[in-house]
Image 1 (tube, rainbow, N blue to C red):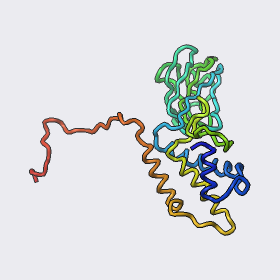
Image 2: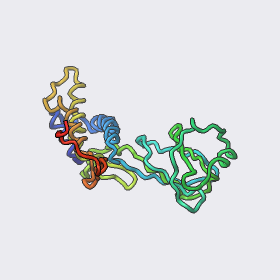
Image 3: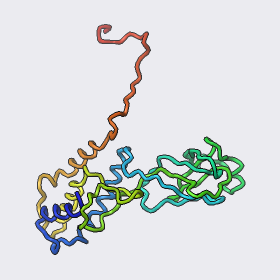
Length: 241
């Protein structure tokens, strides 16, 4: 759906118009549902909303705050800590580190070599545990996920599944009608005398889960590898019982 189509759908379903159900009200109802479903989509582990974020490294700086729209998971971190060579940073938990976190102690216990540099996540920031950090433009790359962009205008005729920019994410098409129906339900339930829901609206959670299930397994080439018994073992086909 485009924002324009979504607004038209919502108003048909609620028997309203732009005066009785203004654009601003529809937009206000859309945002929280987009965020809620984004978390469920993230749980599919299908990399929807993937957002490789590139940041610049600053000399001796250990903390790099996340953007405000980060969805909550880190997939991969790489950096040019020495100013030249890209390496992968490994996840690390400060609880297992039994030393202090002053710069001299960190540099003495970590390095900028592959497998010896780490990152920890603390107070919505990435913290580096490595050798000396150099100043490098674009020297930190974090493969993470961002919330889809909220709809701010209902006049657009561009499908909301389209990424607004190379750095922002759209909203998956299989859930467009579910998203619109959540707004319809909110409207009906907000009335002083709530408007009865249709059977389709009553089953919205089932419809949403069906759509989420269909969104799993984006690549049909993914292999399923099973453990097989050694070739010299006899298969039990029931005749040995």
